[in-house]
Length: 276
Image (tube, rainbow, N blue to C red; front, side, top):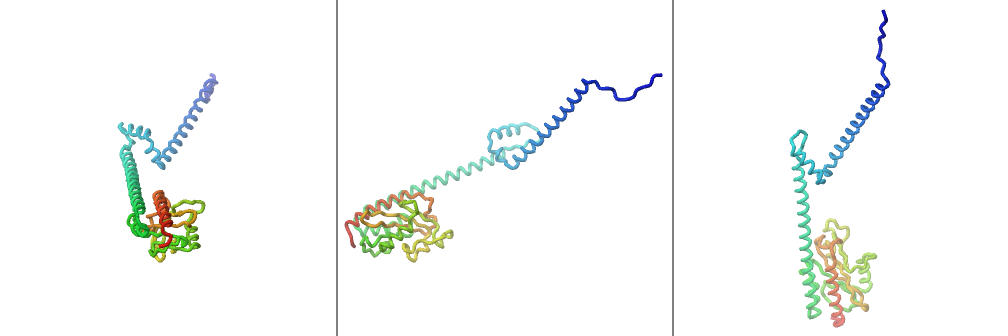
């Protein structure tokens, strides 16, 4: 009786190739599945840390909302988030709009104040009235607390008003040097948050200009005045207790215009009345 051979059935060469292909396909599928899971985890982590990336993308939000309209589990309605984001944006736009309107009104008010002050100074019929307008009326017209007209003794003016600061030629030169920004020969200098009462101030206003009131000045505008080649320059200074009444970021065109008007008026008075 012939013996039986027990063992594994030989595999044909073609079957070996097919088996190897199946093994490689399985490995590729596992690798692809692993990469997909890795990408999914990366995307999920990125979106979790950066939700604005989705909420700020209009096309992506439309796709997500269209999915939300279909029934199914694991679907979150994002309409609330979108509405909240739109309300937030609308609030920011409304606030920016209000700020622009307030700035525009401030500019209009400032322009009207400066124009009114310039017209008052031009209409003065006497030097005494001119001095009164600048030293007294300007405080109300321009909404400031101090007005100082700094002149050199070389102008040969005898004025008793404390708003006129008459200094020697040397004192005036030192004062002009202190109120000049290196490399910037601008007419107007603005200083905010001055004095101990300003809270944020690191220095006080110039005592040579304000005297004992210097620590009370919160902000100031210093306007350089040119009276011609034959006379030393002067300074017109506006001081305010409000530390933000004048500040470095503020426009100075209107104050520069007012300074040009006053220096022209002063040239006329200086030529007509050398001593009063």
